[in-house]
Structures are given as structure tokens and as C-alpha cells.
View (tube, rainbow over the protein chains, first blue to last red):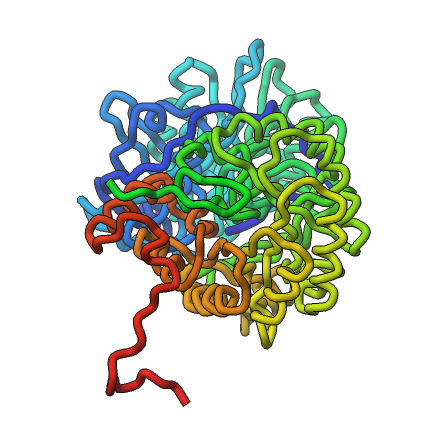
Length: 277
Length: 312
């Protein structure tokens, strides 16, 4: 799991999501399929509170039969009417390999919904989403939410190769303005991305959401400060419990107060303003 | 219906399950009704604020988890003023785990906790492998253990539990030292000192070189330690280490434990932890045990002529 959390960027909590009920349940797998070449999309039956969780909230998952520490994944999509949720991930180790090997009807151990999720600020009328690689999995549901609210939504998707642009086509079909950039063609260079993003930040009423790489997080934090645009970033971190007990995911380890925890004080943080901790 | 209650001498618990230190917080109550447990132990509390260790702090290893969290802590004032009032509402007896970087730290924390009502017992964490000073270093030396336990017992009105490290040659000797010092109970075991390396990075998989191993991988070690502690002392023992199922709970009781801690399993199967008391009751019925006393320490000798009963 990538830990995109550049030390020079100040992160502020948006309001800790303490108090909400979290459930630990066994759910039935609907299916696992490849998506955007290297990723896996895992769909499962979800209970009502999970199927209607906020964009940016996450779950901890493991196959029910595997006595493994659960892995955290942002809910990629959820359907409250049909009682379903899905996550998208890259196979990076044993935990994700076991999840990728699940078949329809298999059982999944699910803890959730967890974390705070994104907050749309009232008065902000357009959304600018910036995702890198599998970080798009954290933004997809928010993009659909913005589109459903009728907000003009721009999505910049950065990846090593064009075939790794997650959800680009479906978001475009849903009405988003999608720009894919990649390392092969060189369009993902920071200068090029900045030239695309700057006019979007300059437009009045914009709000930015990002996930996926330290470089991009630094860039949107800088642009947000320059254009007075609120920026929210979904952070990733390895964690064991997901509810604030294990302290595997402090935002700023080593500080006396530990900063905040990615699991309960995030995973979504605002950039800019006073440094946390 | 079998009788699940246990008597630790200083407290009667509705069932033998105790949420182990480091794994349960007030926040665990969001996902698990803590009143289902017999008792719960807080994370280790220090007098002064302390930072934790570098990331990564928890990695998975075969059958377990290796951690070097380093017990980040906000200090006595925060614990007493902010956290303890929340603990009082969890619905089961709460044991406060006490840590220190020196003997005086433990004493000071024990004294500070005298201001607080409702603490069921103090558990001295003299077994953390991830502390620079204090912790396991102190808990591996029988003379230091006896002296520390005695001095804490003199300064607190609470029953004192000594949490033992398995990282010693003679656990019985340390257990006897804690008993001589006046401990009311023992908890065995804390994590097993361990390492895991990534050959591609040529580095520790943790942010620290060494960490503490927990989970099912250490259960047989923990069972052996409980058995040794039970033979060495007359104190009630909280057996802890890799408990997942009702069978594991009764295995610890058979080895000599009065109560049984559950830890790492709460990270991957909190729901199962909540079901454990009922499952222990079912298993007791199945194997014909009405009260846990009937099982405690009653290990049958190995069958005569059994092949492989003795190793070396």
C-alpha cells in the first residue's frame, strides 16, 4: 500500500467521525473481476448502513476463512437499494491475493463503515478530483455523488499507462469531464498536470479532492493555497484495527501526541491552515 | 447451563474472557458490546506523554502479527481526566495497565490512579518488548520484579497483576518473584520478542528492528508459560496468547489459567470475540464441564507408550 503523506503538507482533520456504530459481519461475495488491467473489483452483499455509507468511508476486509489481519479499502461503489458494496484494489501481497481469489458465494469478513468520508462544502459549486493509480478507487464514489447532485465535475486521472485509468470511461459517460494522463506519454508530468489544474482551481466556487501520490497531493495543496480553494485528501495507511485502537496509522508518528490517526480522524483530511499536531 | 463465572480472588467475573491490553479501547465499544466480556484491560498508561515507534508498526507474519507500536500515550492527566470517565461506562470491570520507563514511573502512575474510582485492578506491564527502558527488561529479572511489585503494592489500594514476558529462561522464577512481592494475580504472556526481515529491502519489515509477536502463532508458547506459572505459584493466572476459539479458552484453563485474555483476534475477528462466551458455555456442556474449576490444571498424564510424548 502506498503511503502518500508528504511531510511538508499540513493536514487538518475535517471533524473526527467518532461515535457511529461499526459492524463486524460476514458478507457474501457477488464476484471479483479484473478492472483497468491490473486492478480487481470485488463486489459483495452489504448491510444497509454500509451500502449507504458516505463517499470516502472505508471497510476492513479479509476472506472469512483466512485468519489474517484485515486490509482497509475505500468503498468504490455502493448500492443502497440492492444492498451491495464494492471495492477496487491492486494485488500487492498475500492479503490482497487471497481477496482476489474469492469466488461468488464465498464469505467475506467485513468491518465498517469506517472513517469520516469526504465533505462537500456548501457554496462550492464545482468539483475537481485528482487521482493517481488505484487512488482513484477512493474518489470514484465521490465523483458519482457530485454528478448526481448536478455539480460540474472534472476528474484528472493519472497512471503509469492509459490502460490503468480506473473508471475513466464510466465517469465520462456519467457526465464528468475526464482527463487521463500517463507516464508513458509524459502527460503526467507535474508541470503538465499543473497547467491543466490551474484554470480549474482559478474558477470561482471550486473544491478539490485528491488521492494517490505525494507529488499530486503536494501540487493540489499548493494550488489550493494559491487560489483559496478547499482541498481534501484521502490518505492511505496500513492498519490493523480500523477503529483507533492499534495506533498503526498515525498521521505524524513520533510526535508526542501522535498527530491524528488515519483510521478515525481521516482517512480524509483537509490541506492547508495550521499543521496538525 | 454451565457456570461461566470465575473468581480471581479480588474480583468475580461473569465469564473468563478478558480483553487484553493494547487491543481494546473505549472505541472498541463501537463495534463490540464490551459488557459481553468478563473484564477488559486498558492500553498501558504512563505518567508522562510518550511517542510511539516509527512506522510500520504492525505487520502480519504466519499465524500472527508482529508489532512495535511502542505504546504512544498521552499521560496520566489525560487518562484520568478524559479517558477514564469513558471507561467507566463500558459495562464490565476495567483493569488499568500501568507502564513505566523506570521503577519510579510505575510507582508514580499507581499513586496517581488512587485519585480515580472504579478501577478493578492494576496490571503492571513489565513485559513490553518495544520499550527502550522498563518493560521487558525489568520483567525478565526476578529481583527487579519482586521489588517493583512490592513497592507498587505498598502504594496502591488496588489488586496488582503482574504481566509476564515469555522471553526468559525460567518463567516460574519470575512468577514466584511476583508472588513474593505481593501480586494478586499473574497474566501470562505478553508478546514474544521476534523479528521479520524483507530480503529485497534488506531491512526490518517493521519500523523498528525487533517487535513483539502475537496471535495463534504464539499460543503453544503461552499455554506452556501458563502451565509453568501455575506450577510455580498459587496465584490466579490470566492466560493470554493467540486465543481465537472456545477450545483455545478451555486449553488455557486446562493449563492452569483462571481467566483467559483475548487480544490479536480482536483485530481480525471482533464479532467472534463477542460470541466466545456463549461458545465456551456450549463447549463446556459438550465435554461435560459444569464449572471451570473442574477443568483447571487437570491435565491427564500422557498415555503410556505414546509415541513422541517426550521430545529429547
